[in-house]
Length: 206
Image (cartoon, rainbow, N blue to C red; front, top):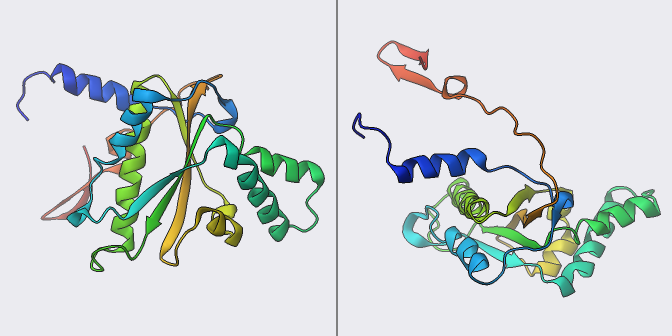
């Protein structure tokens, strides 16, 4: 990069990255992405780094008709962890499946393709795909969020989504319109997470 001022595209990219904000599913409402907007978001995932093009991850969209079944999986997973969970707590668990307009499950395959590609590298590829999607959603005016939870490891969830022995449910991606947004949280500067290794060892980034 030269000392010239950043290009318009670079400034636009910086703005997009810096304005992405997590909006939890309970604060998302219709409309969600449809048509070309949805296709743009999904296509963004395909441009993630993918060593040897093994595509070690996949996405599963949870249609409206399947939301009650997913909600029941959440409730049963809660009961498996806490047999004394109240009816209200079970209802809250079921409600998590109904919130966001677009709900996707990200799945990582630890065995697909080249066995020399480690699980860490596969997860990183999936993470990049998810970030690409969230940035595209932000560019299109939508809110997004990643959510996890103990139910991701539940046998009922694995059965519902048809996961194979080598696959792991990584997280859910929720996308919709923001009903409300929280103030932006301060983000760390490079000096807070970057150090430099030189001939004398490690030193802080100036």
